[in-house]
Image 1: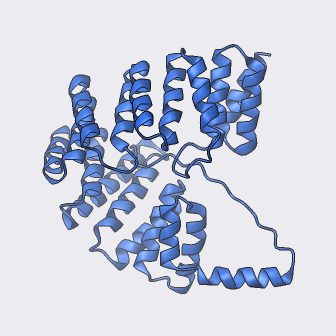
Image 2: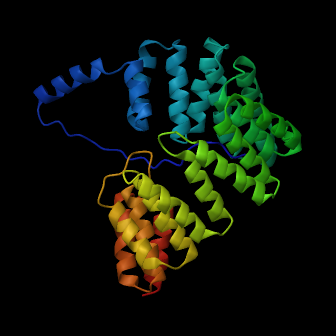
Image 3: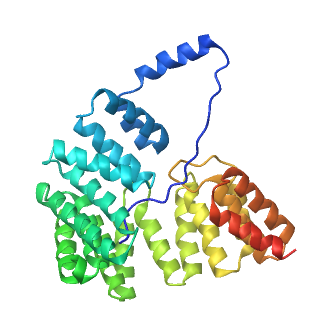
Length: 337
């Protein structure tokens, strides 16, 4: 069962402290930062590995702290560690059963687990996710996040796991009453699942007009929808227009280049997009430089410039040595030599 969560690439770094004095100072400074507030800040900045380390220290001192367990659940979901996400999500709910967000994120942890193991186990685990989403909605009927998760589940899950298009439609109706932007997004998801691309597109265009969010999420949704519909030039135009309006949002430029790769033309423009993207350090929530090198390598591959493609993929692998997708592409390119 798909889980609504962002795709995150994470990095670890090690600081070598050369003197005992530096070590003592660092330890003193670090102790001051092992707080819930620091954990929240790191989560907001997408520094999930650091957030994990801070919050585990909080839990060592306060194992019965419901909020700390909840934040750890949220962090482990982002780190794709479903075992620890479940552990701390269950603990948070055990300590404070009346908090909607705790059930929401525990549901996401169950949803992650549902993607593992046998089909029978997946159905059992998916049902657990649904029950948590339903509990989150029951505890806070105005929660957009909870209703969006529940609607997405109802649309994608099979009937044996509680999926229901009619119930998903009801959720879309309620979401629309609470918030017109997310109502349009909910309806677009519903109609795309019903294979009515025209209605889905209309709702997404409405969402773009309504969208005042800082990350222009409706624009991304429209562009990704067009990509799924194999209308890649139109997707490129959507992202390109948005980038002209918001030139500081480099993620939009990345998607222009990505759309042209899917279209397999306008490759000079795609090359320019990724080279420009590599000039500015990306936000943690955006595609990283390794991703841009990977995509640029794909551009060179399509242009028949194999040596340049290999160089870009080697750089992507250097930046993310554990990424199997990059490794696979690099091997494929070397076979073309």
